[in-house]
Image (cartoon, rainbow, N blue to C red):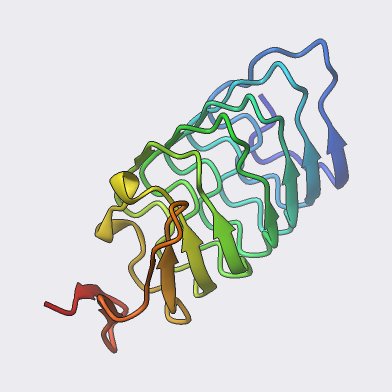
Length: 171
């Protein structure tokens, strides 16, 4: 729809919009923030891929799925709200979102696919259900210190990241 278009600033998608097409805002590198309407249940493949200036996205708790490479290489993305209804985060959804930092709460996520958070180099902690844990989702997360689970279990010594950013079990 708008792929590669020179769109600048904050985007508020009207409440009358109920779906977004694949790659709709891909390479619109002037967008700084996006507010999605409550009726958007999925962020499809490549929707905001390479939106280099994008810093935040606000979505509803009803967002069900974040598609493949939806935020791929959004290097300025600081804030994401993963709502309680978000069950699936697809392959490479947040790949190279290097500005993301601190703790990312994925408590409601049931499916976390490969490379979902690869190269998120400033994230220190992920909170996620143990059943959703996927060791191939966090490569090159150099500042990652621990995984916490909603039942209160914290793992800090069970995994480590080597000098190449590969996550390993300590076993």
